[in-house]
Length: 109
Image 1 (cartoon, helix red, strand yellow):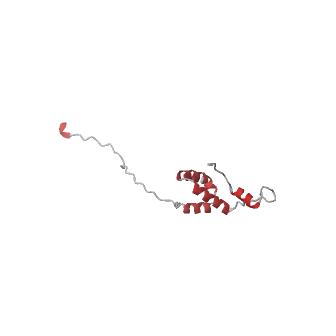
Image 2 (image 1 turned 90 degrees about the horizontal axis):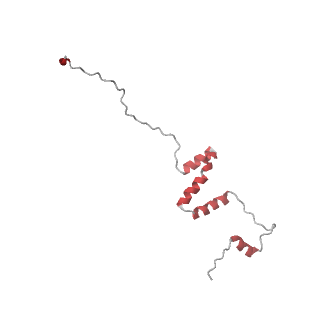
Image 3 (image 1 turned 45 degrees about the vertical axis):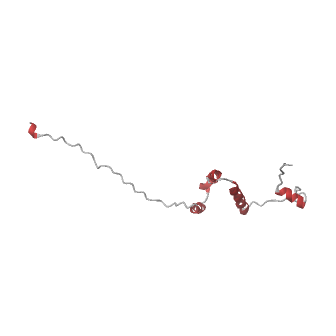
């Protein structure tokens, strides 16, 4: 038999502890900081490099809404230098173009 069965963790818990669908026995998942960190690790293990770039673009969209201290922490983590850099450009322009007078040869007169 080549049929694939799809068993979730909730199905296994229901088998072990009885039916958990009742309101009195329902499990609640606390979505705190650790929950989101674990979910992010699961997501990172499942995606490829191309998809990672797309997800990172979406996550960084509200970056400007973060407080400046958190922005600076993220910039330091990504090793992005935010100090202004002085760029000196030298332009090679002639000072001024003067019209040269035509020299007249006096011997021709």
